Length: 463
Figure 1 (tube, one colour):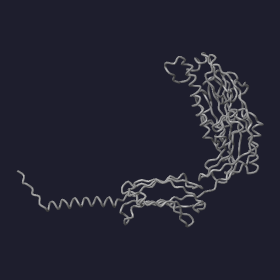
Figure 2 (figure 1 turned 60 degrees about the vertical axis):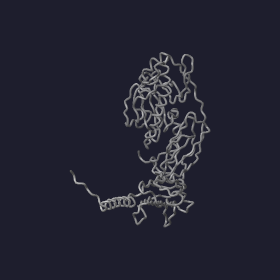
Figure 3 (figure 1 turned 90 degrees about the vertical axis):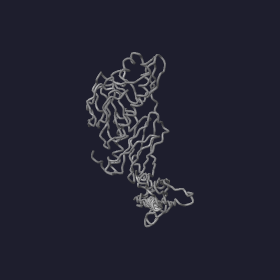
Figure 4 (figure 1 turned 180 degrees about the vertical axis):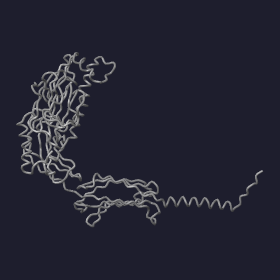
């Protein structure tokens, strides 16, 4: 039998003391916790424009927030942007563990001039560390106050452009800008430097879509590092064009011939499976293919690879024009409408296809309705497209010369007969290829502008 333990009042006192020591240790460790507050600063760039909003989040998961202070220091002067006491009556005794502030900085209104400055942020929590001042987090950010928008000097004079056509604008910026170019309606065409010795001179090829008429607004737009935006008008004239209407009759023979080429699902209970498949190809797949092609123009080389008029498929006849308004009929009923964004050229079957001008191949492959396709980047956002090929010789990233054979015509994709679908793309917009086959048009609208700027502002850099 185990001896019975006797608990005296001394044991009880010892237990109470132990519990008190544990509680005091826990209390002190909580009050003297050493984790610093967290600061999250959302600053679009290290440049602050004329009116800039910044977002700052502060948090402390343990003891909670005591205070937060933000100041802008420049030329020996400190301007307080925020001074927040989280123990003030504003918070009604609540302990704040996280808070976010949107702060609008307007340098002109607070007497801060342009130039280098320091953004300072201080946050303290409710810990008893630091002689009861709390753990401290301090952040400094070197920023630049830039309240002036960039200046744009238009160097090219006249800009005559047809509906569905292309043009070139040349301009100079007063400061480096991460984004600048031509706005044609809601479409934006980036400008590129690198052709002229002066890095501040930019060239921007731009185009009007087939449906952008004389009322389209065209101007140069530049955004500097701070986000200041400047717009500058250019002298331009838009020639209205009316495009041909065309009717394409879709037969069962055509559907049974072409539709097996496309891996497109249609409902199992469809009574006109081939027709339903055609409509999905002609609408949905066409849209997907268009997006893939126009995406290629976003990564162009800042080199002017091409020279002179572009080559047309030799000994060929035009079978369809640019921006033809196509009406598709099946058994006398209108089933679809689409726009043909290229020119169809037919010669003999499997005719050799020359590169229309010097450039770098950026795409070779099968592309849905376009079939086997090659796309060439001619530099500064100008690309040419060759579709419905039966075969191709060129490879991606290959630099091809004007006239070099890159493939042969065919009937791949939605082609109803052996031909070449030829397209010209300016950044993300298809333009009328006829202009680029015309040496006089190129001289008047492209090369004369480049020569005029080159003569006044210096020779071009070598490519």
